[in-house]
Image 1 (tube, rainbow, N blue to C red):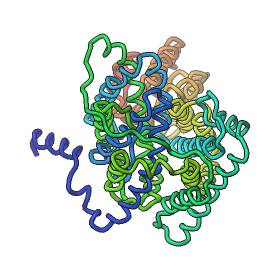
Image 2: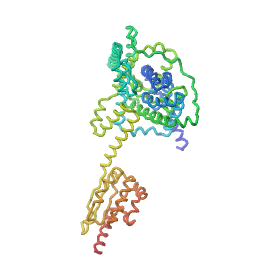
Image 3: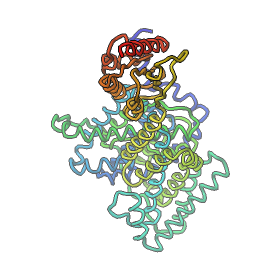
Image 4: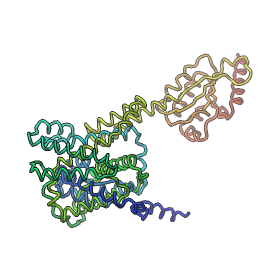
Amino acid sequence: MSAISRGFSAVRSLLPSAADYREARRSWRPDLLAGLTVGIVALPLALAFGVSSGAGAESGLVTAIVAGVVAAVFGGSPVQVSGPTGAMVVVLAPIIAAHGTGALALVCLLSGLIVLAAGALRLGRTVSYIPWPVIEGFTLGIAVIIFLQQVPTATGGDPGDSTNAAVAAVHSVLSASWPKAGWSLALVAVVVLVMLASMRIHPRFPGSLAAIAVASLLVALLGIRVDVIGVLPAGLPTPVLPALDPAAVATLAGPAVAVAALAAIESLLSARVASTIADTGPYDADRELVGQGLASIASGLFGGMPATGAIARTAVNVRSGARTRVAAITHGLLLLVVVVVGSAVVSRIPLAALAGVLMVTACRMIALRTVRTILGASRSDAIVFLLTAVVTVSVDLIYAVVIGLLVAGFFALRQLARTSGVHREELPGTARAGDERIAVFRLEGALFFGAAERALERVSSAGGVEVVILRMSQLQLLDATGAQVITELIGALERRGITVLIKGIRPDHVGLAERVGVISSLRHQNHLFDDLDTAAAHARSHIARSRTVE
């Protein structure tokens, strides 16, 4: 295959195809029901996230519609639902506060282009380097946040000024007014009971949709006074290309990178989580980045916000029976229909009912068997898992992933360092006089920056010897630090009058050893051997010559 053909094939793999909808012939009914369910769940979230970010309710709704459809068509996950998210609001709010809503379109464009470029450069699989405990800790933290975010709605209390979900939940409980809070909690209980009962009827029964319908009907019949969705925007705005002012681009470049990083990480983690709870097959990480980049660009053109994959809505989508991207497309189209013709009906849906749906969804995201498995696997895995979850809830999603990666990397390096070793061996063949003045050390495992000093202390402390043979054929990993330590060790031994011979440098280590100076630090170039017997013979001849001189 020519380079041009491979290039066309690579580009084609990042674009939509008929294969994306092959299963839709059999799953269109559950896909439509899932799309309707997640669309209703996404509606108040889109409005709330728009208001919280400072961009306005209409901006949040536009993001859910435009970005939701674009990401569904071009993205790499068949069940991912995209739109505005709480994590993105945390990043966007200070940007909008500092630069105004006029900067939002340019931030969307810049961040979308960055994410799009990352997908085109095939950087999507970098998420595979995130360890399992970090993924599960992130998922657990997200589930807790989703649950806590619903407490103010469930109680009807004031969440206060804090952006932390736990603090806002406590504040809302303390500020709740009764009996209004009692009615809201009663509706949450009804939704939970209906959803639990629906699970017994059939796994794919649209329990959340039925629960919302039941709760809405009760509010209408009994005249219960609770908070409802309220008035919706009248329609979508006309798309406008933002002005590419060089000064504005330079000012917003940093914030756009932060937004792009969050969009990429959250979308890929959400897609990965979705692939573990759905049996729809793997996701294409690179195509997912391309889809999310295009979604943010399109959203910005219509006055929306940067989009990401939304774990909560994706989970609702999967639990409602979604099999293909038809469900996510339906979710976006439903929101568009609501904006155009159905706002009066949907505006009467009680927010407490939607809170109940998300509370159940959050609980379903927590797999107790997985939690027990990680906690029982090893102490390091348990620490990484719990730390990631705690930081996700208490600080920030991006910080949680970064800290989880750093801690997991520390434990991995420590474990790798423990596999390295230096072992003294006997000389091959029949023992001869003077052999006690020759030391053979076998280096094995990994000799890198985390293990080099400790591993070679034993060699440098060897006493009563005149020749040291370093066996390096069993050394699996050697980095620049390890090579430098060997170089310094050889120099120190030679200065003490100890001749150093090296046996069996692996072919993949020769280049590094030459560049760092391992080989040049030897007393003579013929002190480098491929065979232990030959090295031993040379060492014995050296001892024999020194004894003759004595």
